Length: 177
Image 1 (tube, rainbow, N blue to C red):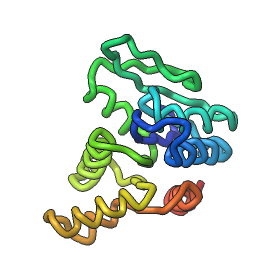
Image 2 (cartoon, rainbow, N blue to C red):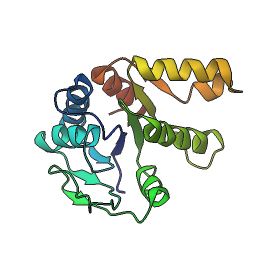
Image 3 (tube, rainbow, N blue to C red):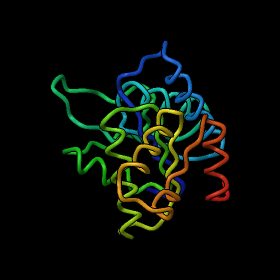
Image 4 (cartoon, rainbow, N blue to C red):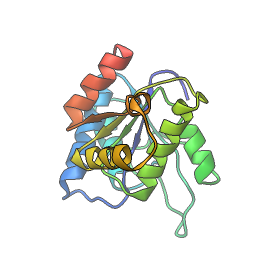
């Protein structure tokens, strides 16, 4: 992906009536207003919300999509679809971004965060912002701190923030955006 790309991870299971959807759409809008290209998994839920907010604010939106049983199409706000053959190819494309942000998600989103984190921890990629948004992610990071073998340097690689504005502030402080 080109420079100044933020990949946003999040659940496909949230809908327009969910508070998490509104947060994701707002985050996309804020990213777009700052001139970032936004990359997502390109499908429904948080991915559609982020894509919508970003596209409606004038940003370029990349959807890194996976084929599905019903021939899933990218959401309506994706400007550029980059089909991936499998989950690992999709992850490689999304992890090429300049920064990563996770909103409400499940096991898939947790896997994306864990892979990004581990790549930085083992110096397989240059350090970059890894920001997780919401109290749910704070609880996950706290559980990892208490239950796994992680040290302060590992934990410092992940920034936990409460909302979209704080995510943008954290991104700006890390990248000068």
